Amino acid sequence: MTWGDVIALLTSIGFGVVSAVFPVINAEAYVLGSQVTAVAGTVPIAVGVAMGQTVGKLLLFYGVRRGKDFPFVRRHRARSHGRPVGGFRRGVRRLGRRLLRLVGSKRWGLPITFVAAVIGLPPLYAVALLAGATRMRPQWFALAVLLGRTLRFVLVALGLGILPPGWRHPFS
Image 1 (cartoon, rainbow, N blue to C red):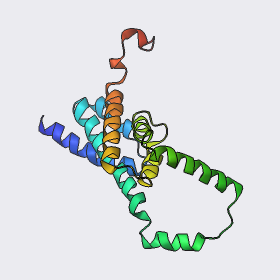
Image 2 (image 1 turned 135 degrees about the vertical axis):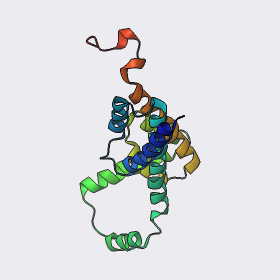
Image 3 (image 1 turned 135 degrees about the horizontal axis):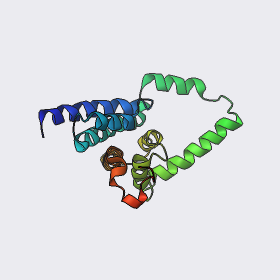
Image 4 (image 1 turned 180 degrees about the horizontal axis):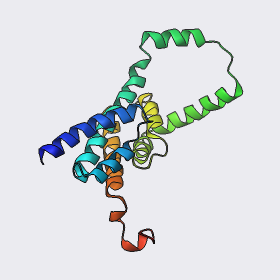
């Protein structure tokens, strides 16, 4: 590994953390852009962004898990307690409880997290928030996110070059 690879890895980790917390910053575009500019190899960039995304999603995870202890959260909950809830909010809450049960289950929690990390459905941002509200162990959550995100970003970095010739676009 050269110094350029080390610097690319470290900056990719930083970018991954920021893009995990602020989803409008696109990590896939960063990985593709880094491959176009050929700053470093595929693996250091993809692994760095995956590591950073894992750290960022863990920040969200712990933010939910520890968030109820924050004073401003307690004040908000005290103010909103007893307010009437409309039909739309009731439906959103019902959906949220259903998703929380799925992500919190021992059978489906980690597979859902891994699939979200690889393909983005359900959105990993939402899964990280839901997982923080469950009893899921942070180390298992982090492992599923790291493996899934590494796979995702390596596939993005390699692009169509990894597909067999018959599977590629006919004009490529």
